[in-house]
Amino acid sequence: MELKILNSDLKLQGVLTPTSLVWSRKMYEPGEFKLEIPYSEKNFQLLDSEMLLVHGINIGIPDPGTLKATEKADDSGTVKDTIKLSGVTGLDMLNWRVAIPPSGSAYDTISSSPVETVMKHYVDSHLINPTNTDRALSNLIIGTDKVLGDSINYYMRYEKIGEELSNIAQSYGLRHDIYLDTTNKTLVYDVFEGTDHSAEQSENNRVIFSRKLENILEQGYTKSSKNYANHAIVGGSGTGTSRIIQEVGTETGFNRREVFVSDSSSSLEDLTQTGNEAIEKYKKTESIPAKIFNKKNAEYGVDWDLGDKVTVISEKYGKTLHLRVTEVTENYGSKGLELDVTFGDPIPTILDALKSKFQEYESLKNV
Image (cartoon, rainbow, N blue to C red; front, side, top):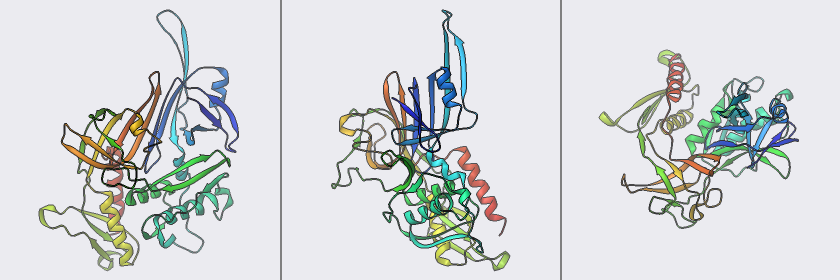
């Protein structure tokens, strides 16, 4: 396996052949990568500059300060020099910009538009065709709008573009990414709706994973209600007793779990949309982490891919679930390609919980 090194103008600077590579792709947010290569002066100089790594059509951006060169001798006295590097995938470019409102406006607003159109609006306005041309990223374009998703209203004010778009993608079950168009030599931001390959449908080829089919090496089962909420109390415009409050949800009594979210709108339609998005964000999660055999009856990148819906059967736990592929980690080493896959939404991490608490605190400051 090879990695191409490009500069910011997308011109080829060199090619690397890692001894090991771990490349993680995620449906809603930037993934990560780690690689190790033998030391050489050429490799060291190549990696010690501003660059993009290209894995297929996937883009990687090195994290600052993560280049590590190590000189080590084994028991026989043989010296082995290595270089290690880690970073994030190209989608993280969206977090290089914040949503600066247009002149004379408090927010950058887009109304009554499909989810995909909304997401692409913010990329275009702040990374491709911003009013201040110093903010533009050269060679970045937007893929053709397929008008995916429901019609929504959205507005931002100085939030990180990437974080907000990841929230939108997760709320509406869409995958988004920045990838390399090798033919036209451009970076493309696009939004995708995964294909349904589950056993619930008959239009597309079915992809089923189970131990009996011998395409799962290891699997587990996780279910979490961490941060779970099914009733959103949305605070709109105004302060104190004059603040507009809209509640979204129908659960009562023991089954009711409340969360407060803030929204500056005075529109009940907007507040209801915010409440529904919060309920989707704080839903219970059910997932199956698994190590996959990349077999011909379910070949990665051919029969299924990130964002697709498939069927996973766990005979041991008595579960048959029809789930989205939300994470794929590609491990390249001496054994070739090994795949670690997350079917369904991953369990929230401690960092997710801290972010959630901070957002709740920020929301409540204006109550």
